[in-house]
Image 1 (cartoon, one colour):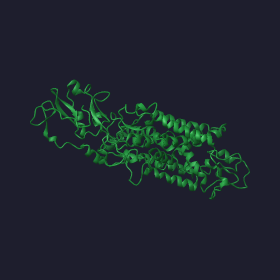
Image 2 (cartoon, rainbow, N blue to C red):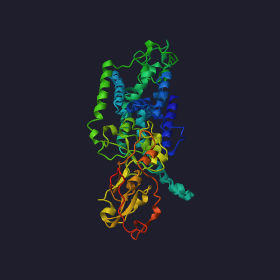
Image 3 (cartoon, one colour):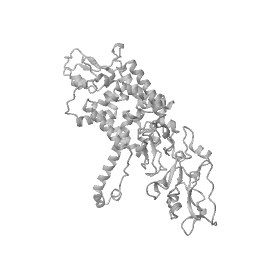
Image 4 (cartoon, rainbow, N blue to C red):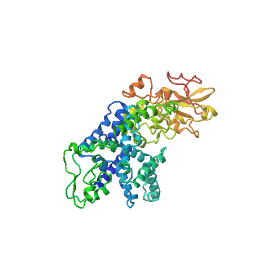
Length: 539
């Protein structure tokens, strides 16, 4: 029964992951598992220093753990299910000797939990490294999702001749866009490491490293359902040998309740049927304390605070501002964004054009794995607002399409030294034709018609950068000049206040094409280009 529930939970997690791109009803959040993660919720609230509505969903998990016990790890956690199924596949017949430093290893996950919480207290988010739900979502995004799309396309290629014979025209031409992400290899190696550790002990990750498991273990001994052993026990130790978490002590009648995940394996393997899990109120003497000394607690707390303060300042702090990072539309102001983002990868997976990519060192250590737009790969689609809808901590605000299109993420800048028109006097109209906001127009300059950017009409969508025919780096790039990033309030009102206009130019009919194919205002031969709007640099 536990395996069936695990399989269903993993299937549900996968279904939400896939359907996040293709649409779900508003009452079904695609990021449900991320919302139910109490460690991510606690980290987001502490780092952002405010209550985040979506993070409150995690109270459901905490409440259920208080009532039932640490059931989440055994039945619901998709990372736990993945580890169990792959362990069955690779290590089912492997003999594993007991680890010599079992007691010391048990403390690691509590040290990590304290370090992550301490970092969050000083505004430095680090929990994304090892939170199981965020980690598995990233693994799905960067590894499994691109692989699945490639396999589907391969399957379609094999069946394409049959589709043509049957007259199924749409299927004979169907080809899914294959996403690609930076750091996919690193992510795959992390997954391989998590699975390889099972060679040492079953559920090694869950036993010794998982910080979410550590958090749940602090409240699980207060649950109603606790392991009880009757007098029929003959101390055969079958329960201890088969316990996936090593929660049964040398005396098989005793249980380390914080480590027990309510899997009932001990009851299933007991030949005397001496084990049961009856509901009972925990007595004070039955509570198993966490094996972490007071000195260890304060060392971990001090280490986390120190690391958070140092890492947010040096040695990568000077890198911030030296790279032209374009954040998703609706992203919070940079400092709040870095504190609130949990690096789960949901926004990157949901991006229809694959323009959202993970950051490396471009915004310092604090910005590692955060989403940024690589507009040379693809533009920010006008009719898509999925990244904000699936963000579990609202580091990217959930906006309507109209609000999202007014959330200016940058301004196009023409690099005259490589532009075909500016540098070589060649005919090229692509950036002008592709711009959905008519922010690029041709004006008579230096004896030729040349492209210029009207900054007050450009919202940084990146269609021009992606379609530029210049090889290598585009001749027109989006920089974060003039970006609008609001913690709250209306982007439409802010755009109006800044006198920005993101819609097709109503004066298009005033321009005609001259004999060279360039736009020129009807009835005029030459005119000076309009001055750059206040607050923006001229091209």
